Image 1 (cartoon, rainbow, N blue to C red):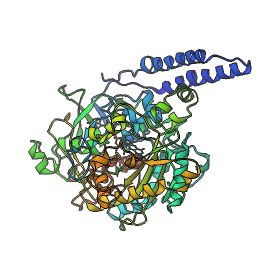
Image 2: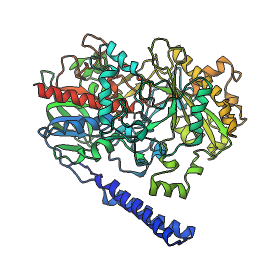
Image 3: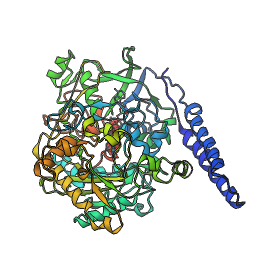
Length: 638
Ligand SMILES: Cc1cc2nc3c(=O)[nH]c(=O)nc-3n(C[C@H](O)[C@H](O)[C@H](O)COP(=O)(O)OP(=O)(O)OC[C@H]3O[C@@H](n4cnc5c(N)ncnc54)[C@H](O)[C@@H]3O)c2cc1C
């Protein structure tokens, strides 16, 4: 018996009791002009909050499920892509599907509440990976390593991400197609984006770039800070036009973010594809807390099933797959599981005493987005924990699902070409986000900063009002690797992104920092009475003492980028898709593992041959949709 719960009733019960009762009581009091004291109201809401926690932690616990000996399909990893694959495959009532997830459930207030996202990093729902020390980047971090959060629960990284819904540029997919990934041009993939999507913003409904019948709720934000609205105008002052829909005809430009949210709550892949419907199907078994240690093969190199284990040192239990095993473990762990199973570079496998099933370049094409925080202090209230964590904000969120807690933080974005990369077709090489907040001690520790790079007042808990621009390198030329630490599946793999090894990557980010500086000088801010003060000009900023170069010099910009660039959490490419003749490919365009292996596919971000021009959750879900469609087609063709 393995633990599994089904929180389908949770949202309904909470909405009914907390939302419905709260709303009713307000209207009742209003209609009789009854005024409660603040204390009475606070007591009332405390009772509602207590109910919320009682429902969440006691009544809605998952019931145990029985895992059988054999299934038609075994899907490994219930992340962005895995939930889609399991949901679509189980639409066929004559097949049965096992979805195996190493983490637990996703039933928590800080998973549902958008602005609580950064509290999930370092929690039990984060794998808490770190890179190896970087030679050219992360120089301001402890041991020169970058922290790599990855989701570890139902929903995977979509349960801990910042919910920005971005598909990338049309030419990203056209490039994949030209690289030999037949069937992956923009025209080919657009229907799969639409299939998942339930666009709830009226302004985008009926538009050929948006779907409304899918499971994934996509919306405009319910709460936007005025600094985010100003960001779009500040972009215009540096020549970046406004776009009303960066997922539509033309991506280049600036706009407010579309988000994966259902009525102001996170809509993770698990919420969309499992909890709404598929999770209760009799032909879908969802096993949480089960770590897959390897795929098993027969002598003909056919995948026969998996071994999975409840904990390090616990016995590994075999489960058989009649039809296929589908790896959806993400860009870090799909390659790890393949290598543990004997599929990977021969020398890497032999180093760890693993018998070689297929010699393939698994883990070799690691690419990730990087951003550089460019912080400013400002004179108006922004998203500091102090300003947001007030009772009225909390109650407004609990009762109405509105207010700052419904914000994802990353409310605005822009896509532009710096001129450094001229080989990307029409695609941008730089994305810009702006976060209406000034980093706290917790944020800087989330990035892995060294103590000496953090100002003394922040260490003492100071919170400032501020605005942080985040220029993002979209198409890195630096390529890294995922390799094995050991043959033990419970040992984290070795992550070496080789950040900023290529000088073009530094150039793009330097252009991004300079662009951010120009944007903050936009008259848009001064006209609204907003004063922005560059943190680098503040005497308490340790960078002023630590940087050996003159502020504003070329060396200063390069130093800043190399010291403070950090992952944007978008690793891809480690089980690269390509033609069978491509020596760097691990899976073909139908996502089947190459090298003579059969009945085994990889369906997640790791198959992307190159990074897309934007955040990777929507593309991961699209890969899940397309992968599942191909599996169903191939079954019917047999
Ligand atoms: C902090 C953070 C913020 C982000 N913000 C955004 C954003 O705002 N917008 C956006 O578009 N993208 C964002 N991303 C990126 C996006 O969420 C990911 O690219 C996407 O979720 C990856 O999907 P995936 O299916 O490839 O892998 P994942 O969603 O990571 O799924 C992999 C799953 O496999 C499970 N698993 C791994 N190994 C095993 C094993 N051995 N046995 C069983 N199960 C296993 C994991 O626990 C996990 O559930 C963010 C990511 C992070 C981490």
